[in-house]
Amino acid sequence: MKEQSTKTIYFAFIWHATFLALTLSMLDYNTVFPALVSALTESKIVFGILYSIMIGAPLIFNLAFSHYLKKRPNKKKFLLLGIQLRAAAFLGMAIFTYKFGADEPRFVVASFFVWIFLFSASGGFAGISYAEIIGKLLSSRERTRLYAIKQFFSSIAAFAGGLIISRIFSFSALEFPANYSLTLLIGFLGLTVASLGFYAIREPEEDKPAEGSLSFLDYLKKVPEYLKNDKTLRRFILVENMTSFSVMILPFYMIFAIDTLGVDSGYIGWYLLFQITGGILSNIVWTYIASRYDSRRIIKTCIFVGGTVPLIALALSRLGPEAFSFVFLLTGFIQSGRRIGFEPYILDIAPTAHRTEYLGIRGSMNIGAVLLPIAGGAVIQTLGYTFTFVIVTVIMFTAGLMLGKPAPSSEA
Image (cartoon, rainbow, N blue to C red; front, side):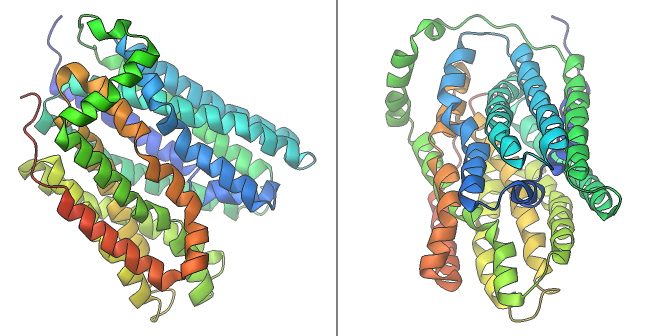
C-alpha cells in the first residue's frame, strides 16, 4: 500500500474532532441534556438512569466490542458504522421531541432510553475502532501531538457550539420543543459531516489475529491474565478510577454555586463559555507538554490541577458568582487534559498485538466513571460540600503520585 502522509492523517482526525465537538455541544451533558430531560419530566430518578446510560453504556460493553473487533483486521468500516448510528440517534431524538414533546412527554422520555442507549453504545463501538486506527497509523509521539492539536480545534468548535446554543435559546419565537429539536438536528448533521474526513485515510492491512477465534467466554478469561502480567496496566486502571472522583463532582459545581451563591439560570451559559474557554486556553499548555514529554506527564498535570479545583471552589464561593467563574475555567482545563492524556497513554502501554484488548479492558474496568457520578448527589447530601471536596482533593493527589514512572512505548 502506498505510504500516506502524516498531514493527511492529521487532517482526517482533526476534521472529525472539530465537527464532533460542535455536535456534542448540541447535547452537552452538563447543560443541554439535563435541561431537555427536565422539560419532559420532573423525575430526578429518570434523569439519573438516562445519565447513567449516557456515560456507562460504552464502558459496560467495551469488552464485548473489543472481542468482536479483535476478529476484524480492518476497523475503518466499523468506525463509520458507529458514527452513523450515533447520527441516527440524534435524528431520532430530534423527530420524537418535535412530534411528541409538547403533548406526549412521557412517550418521548421512554423513547430516549432507546435513543440514548444507541447514541452511547455506538459511541463506544466507534471509539475502540478510532483508537485502533490511530494506533496503526501513528507513532507514540505523533499520537500525543495529534491529540493536543485536535483538542485545540475541538475547543474552538465547542465554543462556536456554545454560541449557537445561546442563540437558539435566546429566540423567544423558538419555543419548546422546536428549540431542542433544532439543536438535535444540528447534531445529526454535524456527525454526518464529521465522518467524511475518514474517507481520506487508508487503514493499513494486517493479518487476522489468531486470538480472534476465541469464544467471548474464553476471551473474558484472558482479562485477568493481562492484568496479572502487566503492572502498568493495573496501576493505570486504578488511577483512572480514582480520578473519576474529580469527574463525579464536575456537574455539582453548578449546583454548589446555586446553593451557596444563589445564582440563577442566567449564569448557566456564562459558566459554560468559561468552561469552553478554559479548554481552549489549556491547549497552549497541553501542546507544550506533548511536544516535549510523554502522555503520562499530561495525565499527572491534569490530575494535580484537578485536585486543586475543589479547594479553589470552596475559596472562591466567598467572593461571589463572578469570581466563581474561574472554577469553570479550570474544569475546562482538566476536561481537555483528560481527553488528550488518557487515551494516548493506554495506547503507549498496550502491546501492539493486544491493543484492542487493552482498550476494551480500560473501558470496562473504569467502574468509577459509571457509579460515582450517580452517587455524587447522595455523597454530597450526606457529607456536605466541604468534606466531599476535601476528600476528592486527597484522592486526586494520591492518584497523581501513584501513576509512577512512564512505561516504555510498545512501538517507535
